[in-house]
Image (cartoon, rainbow, N blue to C red; front, side, top):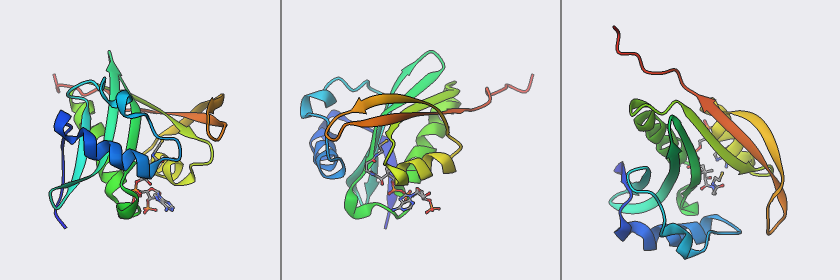
Length: 150
Ligand SMILES: CC(C)(COP(=O)(O)OP(=O)(O)OC[C@H]1O[C@@H](n2cnc3c(N)ncnc32)[C@H](O)[C@@H]1OP(=O)(O)O)[C@@H](O)C(=O)NCCC(=O)NCCS
């Protein structure tokens, strides 16, 4: 299977929204995808078809993962780790050093992945999610600044 990551294009959004609806019990409404900032979001392609996405919001040296999913049919095969790792590497090379995300307390698979890549729990947002109501764990990862060697 040929795997690739590339920047999200507006023309990808209909497939991204389909995956969102399959991957989450409480998906974002389609209109929430319209305001995705350009250049800070990537999709995963398997054999040329969109099978996952990761969306960031960035400011100064901070990058927040605002949405992230792999098509349920393709989960558990290392694709989420590849997409998360590769996108963090690109953002780090662009000067972003602080990475943050919110995750449902019960989302053990995602939490395992974040732990594996070095994210640590920083705190809790009580009753942050609805349908079902649930706390969010705030997780963060700090990567060293890139030095120029001078
Ligand atoms: C969370 C998600 C993006 C992970 O992507 P994925 O492709 O399924 O994960 P990977 O196969 O790359 O797994 C990487 C690591 O994550 C953890 N993990 C992922 N799925 C797991 C599972 N079913 N059981 C146990 N651990 C799991 C493991 O630590 C795994 O590493 P390992 O295989 O060395 O044990 C994906 O499961 C998903 O889209 N879930 C629904 C949407 C969601 O919860 N998004 C995150 C919101 S914060």
